[in-house]
Image (cartoon, rainbow over all chains, first blue to last red; front, side):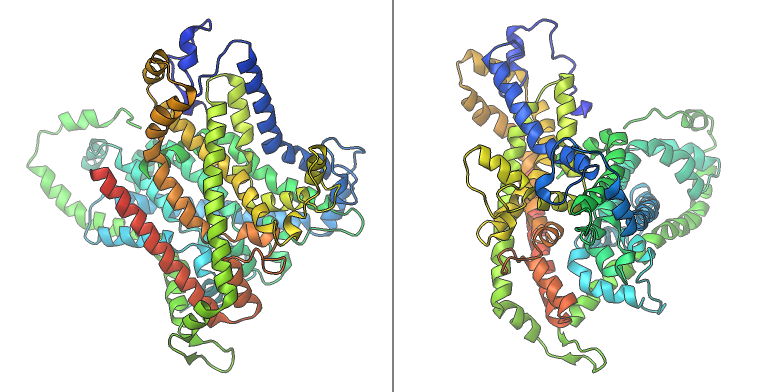
Length: 303
Length: 316
C-alpha cells in the first residue's frame, strides 16, 4: 500500500507547522488532544474491521456450542472443530476450491494475455467489433445469465457433453473475463512499438514475440490480473452452486452453508471452514498487495 | 511502465537496407494475421460458449413457457407481463434499489471517513490500512457467514452483547422483518468501504498541499478546507466508480442469499434471489429468464449512459 502515499517531500524530521498541512484533516503529529482523538478513532476502526476476523480464528480453535460462546481468545484450545469439519468433507471442498482457483486463474490469465496481445499490439480488420464483444462479455456476469448458463453447462451445444459436477464447469466459464483482458491490453498499449521492430527484422514470430519480448515487460499488469482474477474466481458463488450435481461438488465458499452446524461442535465447524476459506485469499493478498492497490487506483483514475 | 528498450537500438541503426523492410513485413503480415486470430480463438470459444450462447438462449427462453418433456410453448410477452405484474418482483425491485443505494452511499461515506483518518505515511497507519482491507479480500460468502454469527439474535449474541454495554436493547438483526435489510446493508458497507478508502486515499495524495497551507493562512476551518479543496479534487475519480458500483449492486446476490436467503417473510427479497428461486427451485424458467433479460437491459442502459455522461464531461 505504500505507493498510494508516496510523497517523498513530506514528513519533515521534526514536527513543524508544515506537517499540519500533510493531511486533509490536518492531523497534528504532536502529542495532544488531536493525537489522542486520532488514536482512539484508529482503535475503534481496528475493532470494527479486524476483530471479527480475530473472533473467527479464536472460535475455530475453541469449544463453542452456540454463537454466543465466541470470544476473542480461545477459552480452551481444541481441534475438535476441524475433526468435525473433516467428517463433513472440509478438505474435499477445499480441494475443489483450490483446483478451481488454480485452473480457472491459469486459464483466465492465459486467455487474457493472448487476447490482449492481439487487441493492443496489432491492428486488423474487425478489431473494433472484437473489442465490442469483449465489452459485452463484461455485461454478462454469471448472475445475469445464470439460468441459461446452467442449461448450457448441462448440455454443451454441438458437443453434447455435460460439464455439470466437474470442476471444468466452473473453470471454463471463469476463463473469459473482460476486465482482465482490458487491464492487460491497456498495459500492453503503453509498451513502445520500437521494442519489437528489431525482433521483427530478425524474423521472430508472433508467439515468441509475445512470450520473450512483450510479456516480460508486463509483470506489473500480470500481478494486477493475477490478484483480481484470483479474487474473482475465489468469490464465485452462483456459478459453483449451479454447476454442482450434488453438494460434494461445491467449492468451499459455497459449502460453508452446508457446514453451518454440527450436532457435536455447533458453529465451531463453520468457523473452521471459514478460516480455511480465508487463508488462501489472505496469502494471495499479502503477496500481491501492491498489485491490488495498483489495480484499484488505476481503475479509479480511468473510470 | 516505460521500460528502457534494451535490444532494439542495435538493429534499428544497423539496418540501413530499407528497401528490404517492406517486403519482409508484407510477407510476415499474412502469418501475423493468422497468429492474431489464433490468439483470439481461446477467448472467442469461451466467450461464445459461456457468455453469448447463454445470453441468446436466455432471451429465447424468456418468450417461452418452458416445460421439461412437454416441449416449450411460445407465449410472446407473457413472461414479461408476469414479472412486471408480480407483486413479489416489484417488492424485490424496491428492496434491490434501497439496498443498492444504501450500500453504495454508506460505503462512500465510511470509506471517505476512513481515508481522512488513516491518511499519512507513518508505518503504523500503513499497517492499519492493510488490516482494514481484509474484508474486501475475503470472499463475500465468508463475510456473510461471519456476520450471520455476529448478528446472532439473542441478547447474548456477539453484536447484541456490545449493544448491551451501550445500553441498547437486543436487536433481531437478520431475523426481524424491519431490521434484516439494513443488517445486510451494513455488511455490504463493511466489506465495501475499505475499497473506496483506497481509491480516496489515492485521490487525497493528488491534492496540492500548498492549497491546504494557504487555506490555513486564510483562516479557513477544517470543514471549509474539506468542502472547497479536498472534495472538488476527489470528485472526478469517484463519480464514475460509484455509479458503476451502484449499477453492479442491482445484481447483488451472494450476500443476500447467504445472510437471509430473501427472508424473513420476503423482507430482504431482491431481484436476484427472486429470480433464483423462480428459476432453480420452482423451475419456472421462462419467467425467470424474462426477469434476467430485464436486469440485463437495465444494467446495459445504465452502464452505457454512465459512460456517455462521463465521456461528455471529460471532453468539456
